[in-house]
Length: 395
Image 1 (tube, rainbow, N blue to C red):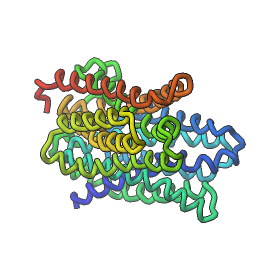
Image 2: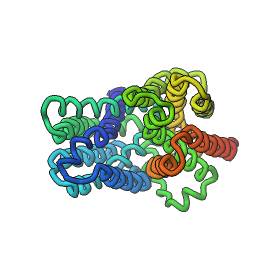
Image 3: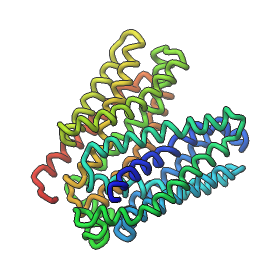
């Protein structure tokens, strides 16, 4: 029965992705009903992000107290309740209220599941699991679109996703014994001393660990680059390169398809290359993609560069996560992954809006240059991390 746990974790990663793009896809139908400016989506998004940062920072303490299985089940249940609350809301301030458990549920489960997989499964599973997240993130807007095109309201789209999350919560509750069986006798087990017995680290203690600041900045840079590309690629192609709006939107969508497909392929490549090599490979492909976008010429060159950036992004997130126990030890990995996730969400909150200011006051043409600067900082931080942790034998 223990082998059933991996498919359950795959389902959980799909569940993580399902709500991620819902707000963006539903907001055009939502904000006229609430009679608020279109920009108010940012308020809800920020509340969710702040909740996610808080719960990510608390994930080490929660996982040591409850274990990964219970944290996952409780977090998915919180997300399901928040989504159901969204589906029943008819005022903007109610959405803001429900955004609190929405964010708190997302952060803990993300950090706990990623750490569990990093400790117990090979790197290929981490890549494929994040590919499952991409499938969930792609499916969410399609489910919302199905509801809206069928004559139903956006509330119905949220309700459909909430029902799926409730169903998954039930599966996770029934699977709780499997988490304990899977981890018995293994490194980082729930009963073996790394999840529950060791003392939870405080944030100052984590930051003092050699390499911790570097991995936090590295993760900040990766997620900043990914979200900046996601948010501004279409505007860059349309406003600077003259690509028609509908074509630009379609190719901006291909960026995420590139990440999803790239992660599926990366799972096989990890059988030949280790995590550090995979991260360097991804950074190299991103760099090539950015340089291609800087080449003057036909629109197709920029479109090809954007796809390359998506493919390059594919291995970096899962391989940084999977390499955490190797860099810092299994006894510290949950704490480090928690602050990595918090750093990631800070990056997604700050850096895309910063480029918006640059595009507004200077020029959207600086889009590739902006990403190149972020990439350069990420490469430097990753190399420093590798150097500082290269001679450890912690596991």
